Length: 409
Ligand SMILES: [Zn+2]
Ligand SMILES: [Zn+2]
Image 1: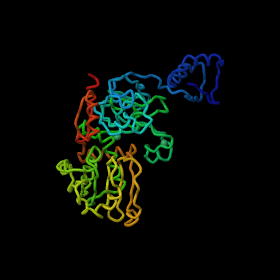
Image 2: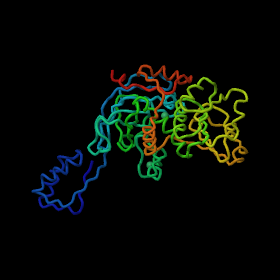
Image 3: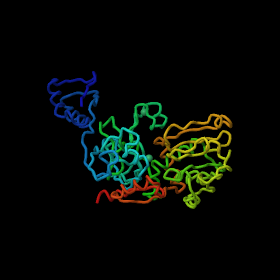
Image 4: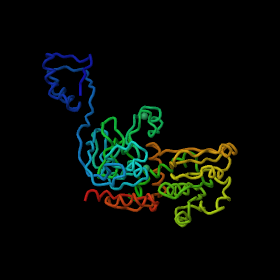
């Protein structure tokens, strides 16, 4: 840390006295130095003082319990991790619940490459504000808050200024397995008891929502809300949701709440009753011969949540003219698109990746007004490995949520 005096500082006592007075406080936060200067005002006439900080003061950390993996495909196990103590703009959140997203499983398995171990996953976090930094004013202690997929970004690039922090040109800091440029630490996610986040990236959880069931809104909720918003889902629209899993079940609830006539496309009829309960009016089992023939030219929007390989060209034929098929799942690359199907009818194919802070808050407020939460199975931390196995075989209805109290036991 260094301090710089502007040219307008006038010293009436000797420079040596002044220097000695300040050197005592070198290394302390600047506000202490200002207090020192005020005390010493009888000896010094200071008209203006400015200081610059060259070293982050966030060097103090605390150790907390977490659950994570120390190597690719290794079982998750109890770990101790370091969190920074809250800086001036931070809030410390006592985590209540954290959803398990499919990307957690991919990161632990290192399916996408580049996972930094140990990894503590989790970006569907709901908790209460436990403490605040001296300049953090947005939240009260005890307030119910959420943390989604990202915890920091540069804040000044065009994407950040437009509220699309996930595409920050300097590189967004994700909630876990991301290198934080400010703290020079790897981020650890919500499979833990506490998290410290700049208040700018913290979300307000509306009153009245079930706490555990609100956690998956932080990723599954925004991932499916954003494309409905972007492509202007409105009452009476014919909307298809492909795949009824963690993402798909949220897409059905949200589209139905917006007044759309929702159709679910799922591989088998196993989830037909669930689809209807969640708000879908129609259901088609994609593996039944001839089942899809009636769907040609039907939908203005298709939200495709499936990550396994499947026939995108066939689905494109289900769009009406100027309709859009938006991918939120990540099937392996290599599928060839049929240009004729796209061009004929001005059909569109799009992708959508989570959402920025403002849009995520908008989604939460919308869910608060409309009473929308996820369907969840609450588990303890020692059930996480079983949950991962069940997710890999599609055996979850529709999101596992970890009760963080089990990490404190
Ligand atoms: Zn996620
Ligand atoms: Zn940025």
